[in-house]
Length: 72
Image 1: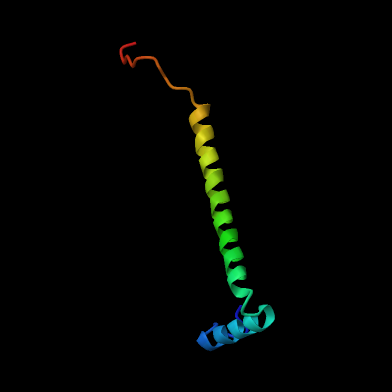
Image 2: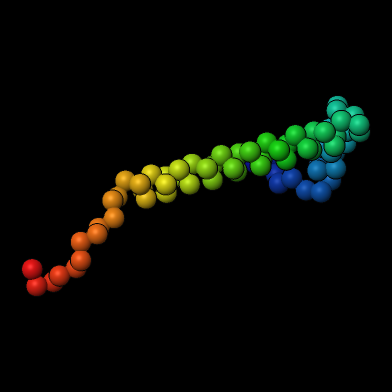
């Protein structure tokens, strides 16, 4: 549903120019740093949930200490 077509290099330059005008050149490094930290926190929170699930699986199943005897 691209009404205006794909975004090319000219459009990206115009968007970058508008961002510089709105935020100013001095705030762009802070804005980039904040954006990077947000992405880093998002990735770590997603990774943390996976680690918690693995930890729960390990704790939920008690180890089988019985020796394996196929004859009964």
